[in-house]
Image (cartoon, rainbow, N blue to C red; front, top):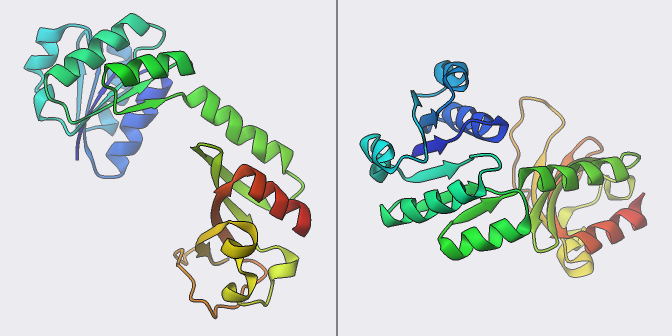
Amino acid sequence: MRVAVLGLSDFGFHLACTLSELGDDVMAVDRDEERVHNVMRSVGKAIVADVADREALKDLGIRQMDVVAVDVGERFETSVLLTHYLRELGVPRVLVKVANEDQGRILSLIGASDVVQPERESAIKTAHLVHYSRSRLMDAMPLGGGYFAISVQTPPGFVGRAVAELELLNRYHIQLMAIKPAEETAAPFLPPADYLLLKDDVLVVIGQEAKLVELHQKLK
């Protein structure tokens, strides 16, 4: 996948580096020479340019990108103009970092395919990890609309029981997506109905927050 990351603050920098690590063809652009220098070894192409300059972006081949991510910090007006311009150029997917929900709604109306509020999402995830720190919760990811994906060590009441016997979907409205065995080198897998859960298995489940909390209260 060909990705351009316009703006290299913390979010843009780590986004560019991670996508490159995953094998995508990444072009990182920022007007700050130091930021470009810092990311240079981690991406396929790093360029010093003003991302608000339409002609400069056109010369960089933005039209050929599958995804363009915009991270221009607090310059909301620049985010608006860039989103509109990228849509005019025919970029199929435009992802924009926003500071709040109001900015997200405005940019979505203008044409942003995805809006990301990383500080809020990180805070929500951290709050859940802190709140459930005494439980077996290992990780949590907000999915929007009150839904979360969490990974949790097998509760004592589940050990030795078959997946089908638990009836997670019918009883708790929670979907078991995968199991990660205790062995570090073992890959996650979708368990068959007759799989017997082990004490050190890690369950990856998806559900509404209220249902996940309800399950947690019953099993802690």
